[in-house]
Image (tube, rainbow, N blue to C red; front, side, top):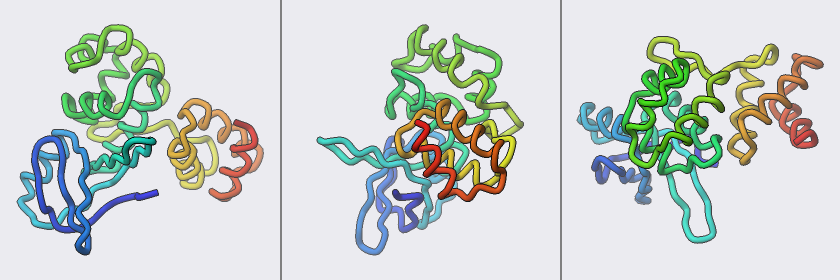
Length: 196
């Protein structure tokens, strides 16, 4: 799994960036927020946090200027009926903080302003994510485990990357860390996989 790509910005436009890393150009789909950050920095070098979608007919990379934006993206695609392109549209239409505020306040109207998001999808986003994020100024706080701290968070991120829903992963890990708060990341993932 690619965590981030760092290199020279070979091409930049509002929908994608090409990052040249040792002679290999990685085309990464980006949000308008990430485009703004890269454009304003004016630097030739960039580091984007990555999410890779592998399908039979395509391998697609998504790039994010911050880990918080990638977390928001992962939350969005965990919602039934929300694909990577819709998630990217949501995060191009609002900042991570605006997104977390809209979820916390149940602001269906704000989500409906995003192209491709109807009333039902907007409601599903809010219902599915309301307990998982809390607006905290300019950051997105994903609900953390009661025990385990960093190990819990890393195991949760890994399970989501493996394709399990945030809700199911969270439930399994909370149960495991409640019984054994000193679990390692590897141990937690292995045990969670048996429970899923």
